[in-house]
Length: 190
Image 1 (cartoon, rainbow, N blue to C red):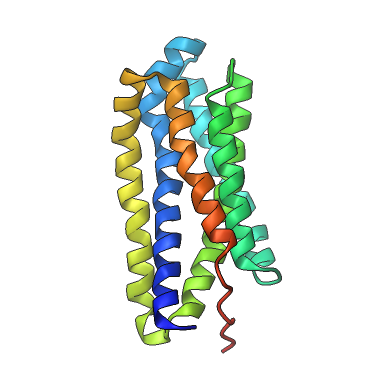
Image 2 (image 1 turned 120 degrees about the horizontal axis):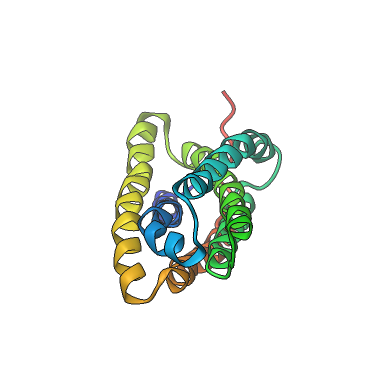
């Protein structure tokens, strides 16, 4: 794979990782707004995060297996579309159960992302650079998580929790389109 294209792929996948963690973390700062509006207890609000993490962890392995058998960039794109749609739907929920289902769906979409993205980057760069490349890729995760926490509080106050979910879901749709068009790096077999 040509080096400039591999860097482009790194940029797109890192941007997706950033949005991934914004979508994941924004709910934490939106919590007080959601709890007030939907009348959720602290226990119910805690279950939203638990459902996300449980579903995410259970779905990651099957998506890893699928990533060994199918076009990884398409799995990435479909996962991003799915979690972005679930984030958007989170803003349309009217009760605890519908929000629980939406946040669990975010977990499914995000589980579809990490296995193929890591594999694509590992195949796009030489072995001697992989640790650095994956480190750069993970910067998107940490910055996105921090931005999601801050953004949730700001947007919750300015436009409300529902509109905040709508707004943070939008970049994912654009990035999914870019991921769909990525070229698949040849798989490295050791």
